[in-house]
Amino acid sequence: MNQSARILLVEDEDIIAIIIRELLATEGFVVTVCTDGFAAWETLQHDQTGYDLVLLDRGLPKMDGMELLRLIKGDRALASIPVIIQTARSDKQSIQEGLSQGAYYYLTKPIQPEVLLAVINAALQQRRELQDMFDSVNRAERPLAFLYAADFRFRDLEQAKLLSHCLAQSCPEPERVIQGLQELMINAVEHGNLGISYAEKGELMLAGTWQDEIQRRLQLPEFNKRFVSVHFQRLPDKLVFTVQDQGEGFDWQDFLDFSLERVFDLHGRGIAMARLMSFDRLEYQGNGNTVSAVVNSASSLCGLDN
Figure 1 (cartoon, one colour):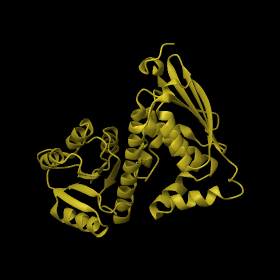
Figure 2 (cartoon, rainbow, N blue to C red; figure 1 turned 120 degrees about the vertical axis):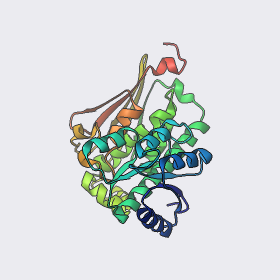
Figure 3 (cartoon, rainbow, N blue to C red; figure 1 turned 180 degrees about the vertical axis):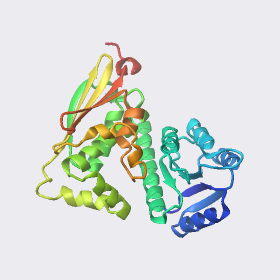
């Protein structure tokens, strides 16, 4: 982890702010504290590229946390900054509102230090990966805009990331699609082929051993010959990506939408985010080991005549 990451802590209770700041400083983070939403917004406007994460209290003077969240997510220069909401309010409506407005995670007070650090590290890691994806797309040529059909196979997470970067370039808006493709492909490896359960992933993430466990399972005899297949097809009015693993499938229905029952888990929002943000349609088939993701009107947006 990049322990010099800069965090903007927006908290109006002095004691809580001091405790969190000292905890994060001990871990090597650089922390700036604002005591109201308006001051935080001015700070972000003054230094739009300086902060890697915002830790935001929901109830704030001058400008409340939800209004600040909406401003951040509505500003193109700031929208990619992950925002973690902390609040004493744990009712379902408040949680749903925060997640629907683009919050990365929702923590309820009193804050558990180990959970706070795990969530912050996960958010920063995801942001770094997203930035790498965007940089890759922005640097690349777009020859895949002329690709009409192809089949791919891969085994591990690095190959999943590489292929998702590549296939996103076939789309008119690669920055929109790339995160969703990567989410589907990583799920096919870890939950599909390697059989890591939802509960196991949460425990591994909290312990910081998720990547190690994936590498271990990739070498096991029962898993080391498994692969994920991806079929790409360009049709006159859409692009279709079909991802299939060799696992036993899963109960996918509960993961298509945000679940308030899983809102405090360290993971479990990726499929819903992909469905909401990356694709025009997302459909699982059969036992859940095959998923089809659709991007509409791809050909016309790419400037191709069909």
